[in-house]
Structures are given as C-alpha cells and as structure tokens.
Length: 258
Image (cartoon, rainbow, N blue to C red; front, side, top):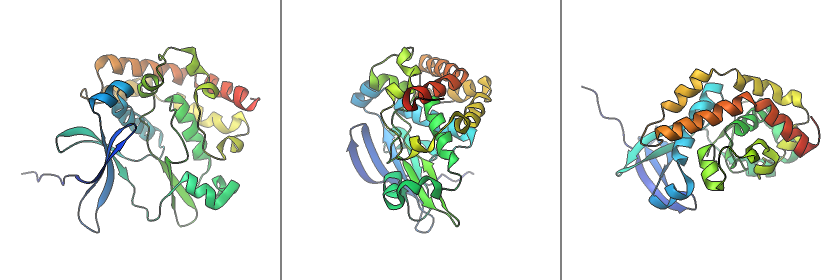
C-alpha cells in the first residue's frame, strides 16, 4: 500500500497586490522544504486571468530548455487549489538587487556562465514576461562562483494580456522595447550585439511545435480552459517562429543597433 505524501503546512499568510500568498513548509528539520503557495480568489482571477496556469506553463517550458527556474507544483492546501513555488536550499540567497549592490557593475561576470542571463532574457521575450525585475532572480554561491534561478512567471502570456488589458493579437507585443518596463540592472549594457542572443533564439526555435502543444495541453483543466490553451499555443508558436525578428527589433529600438 502506497504511503500518503507529506503535506504542505502554512507558516505565514500574506495578501499581496497580485493575490494571496502563503509561505508553506513540509518535512522535518534537516530535510525541510520551504515554498510559496499561490491561489486565486474571485477578485484576482477576474483582474489577472489564468496566472497560476501561466506560472506552471512557463516553468515547464523553461525546464524543456534547461533554464534554471524554481520548481512549481500543483497542490491543494486547506481546501485551496493552487501552486507551490519551491525555495531552493542553497544556503545564503540574494535577490539580484542585493547582489548587484554588493558587486556593482561586475555582478554579471561573477556568475557561473553569465550568458545564461541572456538566455533567460530571450525566454522572457518568447513568453511575453513583463515582470522580470531585480527581485525575482535569486542568486546563491557555488564553490567557484555564483549561480541563479528565476521565480515569478505569472505575468506572462495570458496573464500579461489580461493584466495590461491589451489583446494577444495587438501589434504592441511585437515591440519589446515598448511593452517591457523592467530590466535587470546591468543586463542591457552586457548585451552588445546580436551574436550574443542568437544561440538562445535558435535553441527556442528548435523546440518541436508538437512538444510545445503537448506542454500546454498538459496544464490541468482546473487551471486553464481548452480555449485558453488554444490561445496560449497560438501565441507561443507564433512568437517562436518570429523570435529572431522580435529580438532584432528590440536591439534596434532599445539600443539603436542590430
């Protein structure tokens, strides 16, 4: 007989502008996991759209590409259906804001494989993430340098379109420099030419359309309706095909060069 899994237990509950967030934990001291649980109430669902599904979908797509993101798990806690974002156990953690204040302009070069921040930037363009900022990149020390993982991808795809009240088919979404209001400190200076972003564009464009569709369709129906899945598929496949144009346009409009 299969033993029941260890349940998540609320530690602290917060009401945030984007909806309820609980700090949760499971396991015993020495093997304890910490996470952040999000669920939707009527108010946030109407205002933000299917943001929990977008968080889960972005996580699964990132994993397909080998991008380091916090693990996302669909759970029910105290009768609330939602998602838990796992906090990685890596000792001392810093936000990018804290790390940049400590290291200054050399912060990016202190990272193990700093070009992975460019990969994340290209991924954010693909999924129309409008909420990448200095607090949702988490830095931790390794033996030789520092590494990072990304959190908070709810403001992407359908979450973005609902929150901004701009339909997915608007031409605005073709202009990253117009819709994106946040950049990691130091990143835009680090990106100097198209050759730096090209490998990561090609990596996303090599993903099979079948794989992308399967990833979308495996999101639980309780989080994302069939119509919403079809819309997300359409956006992802269209932006995948045109990703090189989107990034080239950003370089031209934001940095004045390609």
